[in-house]
Length: 321
Image (cartoon, rainbow, N blue to C red; front, side, top):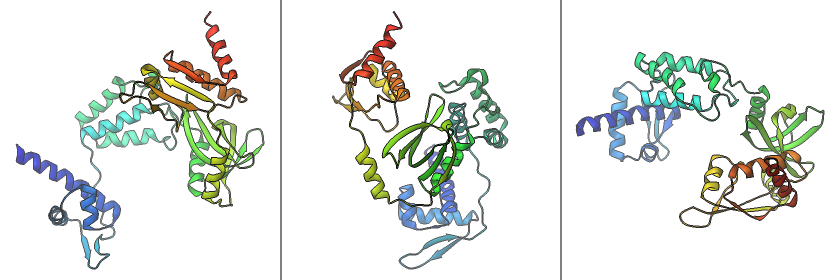
């Protein structure tokens, strides 16, 4: 049994090493040792086995030497085991109806996965689509073969433009022009929000993707150091200071704004401090903060909060009578 286990372990390792080699084209023994946490002698044996399997490797001597794969020598088609296929399907199900970029071809990808699966695997995968439910999925349309998650085309354009230059020129639907630096994107309550530093107003803005009509990289390359200095200078000091109990901590882990962290007050992580900033003059941001604070539940002690925020929370509670 132990010999069989070792053989299976070695087979899996060599298959993974072949993928690694194929993806990197050029590599050294030291790189393989570090990547797979194996000894030099094990690497030497594995490389001999890999060459026997038909992967042509050219060795190069010298301090910068290593191995290179002959061009146009491709590995066979990728094969997934049952756990790997199920993991891919679960990730597909978990992100259904969330309008992810680049996934308007989910149907094609799903069909390809089903095509390489065995009959038993295919049956199990189809059962998964009916068995699992996540908060972000639509129970009335849980099938992976339906195109339910086509994102706004501008989302893909925005991401591709940011690959060229994070300094972007936006045109809003009302005709205004925004010269800004894209900080990050995040998905919130079925909508994509764009967090951009407005270079003219010197402030960070959170804008719904639907409020943009076009986006393009700016020809001007900003100095990253100066840009980060501007963002740091413009960053608002916290005006919200909360202490969270166990239930509120669990709620925080389920949902919170990006780049926000808790500072635990005890070694058992049963109490934590949370600080944040809310622009009380922006009604949408203020409303979102009220919604989130109520989501945390009663296990929250308010140390500091703007009066406008307190008033809005009280009004919301009074609606219950």
